[in-house]
Amino acid sequence: MSTEIRVPTLPESVTDATVLSWHKQPGDSVRRDENILDLETDKVVLEVPSPVDGTLVELRANEGDLVEADDILAIIEPGKASAGTTAAPAADASAPAEKPPTATPAAPAKDEPVLTPAVRRLVRELKLDPRQITGTGKDGRILKSDVMTYLDQQTSSRDPDAETVASMVNESPLPASTAHAEQRVPMSRLRARIAERLVEAQQTAAILTTFNEVNLQAVSDLRARHRDHFEQNHGVRLGFMSFFVKAAVDALKKFPLINASVDGTDIVYHGYYDIGIAVGSPRGLVVPILRNADQLSFADIEKTIRQFGRKAQDGSLSYEELSGGTFTISNGGVYGSMLSTPILNPPQSGILGMHNIIQRPVAENGEVVIRPMMYLALSYDHRIVDGKDAVQFLVAIKDNLEDPSRLLLEL
Image (cartoon, rainbow, N blue to C red; front, side, top):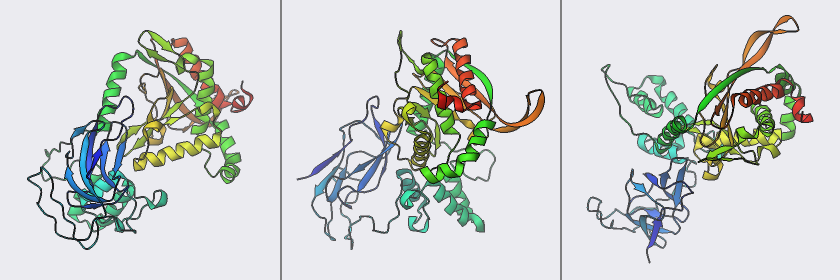
């Protein structure tokens, strides 16, 4: 009896998905739990595994098609596929009527490198052998940066074809002999969703931004004093982000409106602190959520953020990790930003922008000294947050960072 492969249940608020890439074609053998295609949504890429051993006999959707939950994607004839098994693609006149016998099933070899969905598609399009690429991700997983490194090595001999391939990986226009060459590519689902959300935020919220600066000398000294011991005890580096999360949560407790959201004509006060951490990924900006951040230790925060960064790079963040959030922190400083006005992440009413840390002269006790300084920006929804509260909220974060002992003493 044939088995139907259907679009899995999509999370709430996600209505459809795009068929990103097929990894099997009609006539190919498949193994139980083997990924046969990737579906792209506006948040993550979903892998769709086969529920049975058998042979793929029919595709019901092409790459680029929009599909909804429970739509039929493919048909599989169950059973162990033999070396000589062939299958006729149903209802597809353009597909070959018969596939030549193969010596072995088309399942991945045991030494096949671990690939993310995005990298698997890239490797296939560029006709690369993944076994020649060294993976630096967890368990040897090949990341997009690993593909770029491999291509850079190939371009050392100035091979024109390799340079063209490298430009595809970087998503920059292809080399051309004229100055007016163009390349048109469709937005990814994630990029389109980001664009939609940004426009939505600008149109529905009254966004205003207030600024301040913070002296990070105390945090820097604390990190330097305990860095080695912290890493030995917890197996993770003590960074700046955990201090900012702790400082923000403390300030949110004092100014609950900035942890609230607007729902029609109602204000929804959240009695929990789910902090979104903006992270760059090959597919665009994603904002995974630190759940119940007020209950997390410094080590818990650092470990979770590091995990978010790794998952963002290999495209394995889940819907649960990307859904919700009551407040967001965005660190443009890692890219060298000195000052910016972050845009709200609806329906949240506040977002904190971190920036580059610069050694600058400041006045202390009547003397000019050099200190590690950072500009802070708080964008907020002026519909429910008054300027006075926004300014004082940012000052509270500044005070917590310039005297971290306040966080321990809950001052």
